[in-house]
Length: 522
Image 1 (cartoon, rainbow, N blue to C red):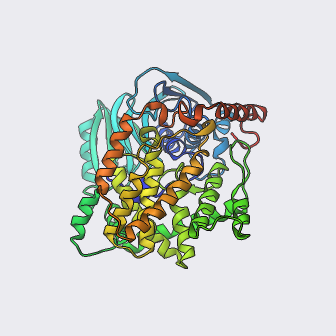
Image 2: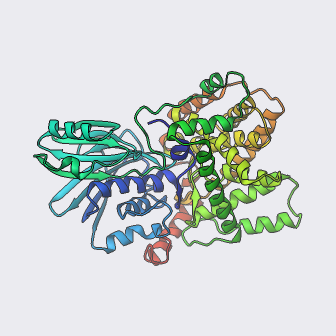
Image 3: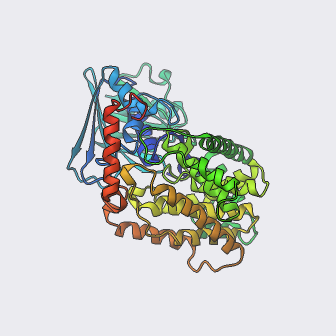
């Protein structure tokens, strides 16, 4: 699938501690619900023992996302923390098991769903930043990203069905994916009148899109790497944000005004979330409490070390991380675990410079182009690449955004991105107490500070030495050399220190005491 800035890089708007876990799981659940026609009596969820999910599905939001999706809820639904209890409370049966199956991807969901005499199985992977792919349906290989309308038709007359649909509507793809099963990908569902009168149709299911930007047949984009972007620019000196707008317009069949309008809407959500964080947050099941208020008090009183705009950036990053940890509304940018570095840096710096929301949106569009390069070549998932894939990507994207705010050139934006990612290669992912809070807060602050430093270095003409594309490939190579224990599995680093284990035990006891969800912490 061709990467979209609004699908893969800036988004989704969500609640939960982790986009790889919560938002992606919700999208998988939504598609599984549609596969069952909205009727689910029992669900078996299986996780491979060698993957990341057996140790993290409960505390990092996989359960709340998956069952929210099975209920048909949205990723920003305020009921998500209690979704598993609501699902089970309506008389449905839940089984979650760990199995030894050797799944290649660490974030693999194996679902078997039952209702009455009907059952279906669905295997899907979470690929980072809330993105996912359904890879098996009833044991048959498929590739579903949730970026189109999927109509599944079980029939005894495959040729007749394919002919009728192909003649009656414009489709992006139509094929027999298994004996007697036709899959139709299109911009709309196959309508009933096209199937009426056809003999042999046994069942039809409609799997709705879960992504904001649809894929169309023949979609083409102007570039997918930094080198291709420079070739596309041809020395014309077009700002990075304008190239990003052109890219997303081509990807989603959108006008420039529509693309920028979508980003301005996201900026406004972010500013509301920052305000909510600064007003104070509370949540039982978290490691860190409300700290941004104290930082603001000391900053305004002049009792912090002088750091210019960086102090406001730290304040906003902290506020956004606290909103995330209290199950408030955030935007994965590019992930939930790294949701604060990029917007905190951009919004704080823009305010310091007296710039408006459209300037913030342009800067975020520029960051989106950097995210396209990373997502196309690699991944945002910490389970795949460690925190270099999350915090490193956020720093790289934020550096380009800050150069854009300063009116820097395309070449300076790419150089800043390269230097920022170079500085974070090898960063592991080791959440304390299996919550995405610490050292995640410090890593988001570090990513933002790194971005600011590299932006200024690029604006001053510092040599990036290694081009961005090569840095991305290097990070990808390093990720394959990282032990699994250091890639968001709660099996290494700070996550297995005595203090971390003690905090995790205390939080687990608190969840049991409150009935795991009755207090809203579940």
